[in-house]
Length: 170
Image 1 (cartoon, rainbow, N blue to C red):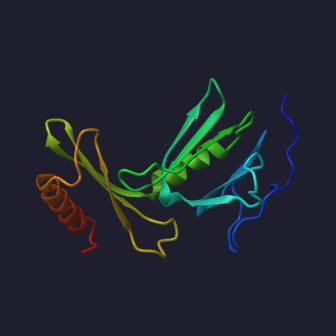
Image 2: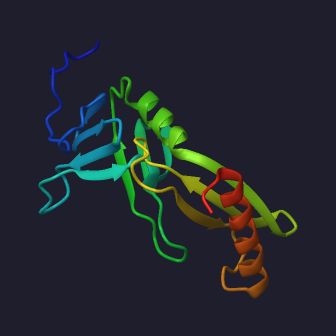
């Protein structure tokens, strides 16, 4: 049985943004706009507002159908724990479609560079939906690849230069 939805999600978004899809969770609400994903969990002590995660900063979003859990991890720095949000959504509705579409649309280029056999690094270019900010470039390293190794640094630099040339952002 589907529960009736309220016309507006119970959270505020940034000025100029409009909620395109949202879902209530037992512990809060998750909503998506053209520019960002909003996660507000009432179970977070002392937290009154929603976390705003621009789509280009969403590293991955996974849906577990069996547990009804949406897991969103943010882009982070190598060696540091990435911010991650886990939310149970009984009725995700169109939110899952929006998350997939917006995250996919933010990726301009992704290139794997082998370093040791299949292990290597990825050069990734991400862009904000409106294109009002420059493309952001990040590296992701496979398990066992040391980003401080001079050979890895050299290969990463060459791959970044080639990717920038390909995308036209020298």
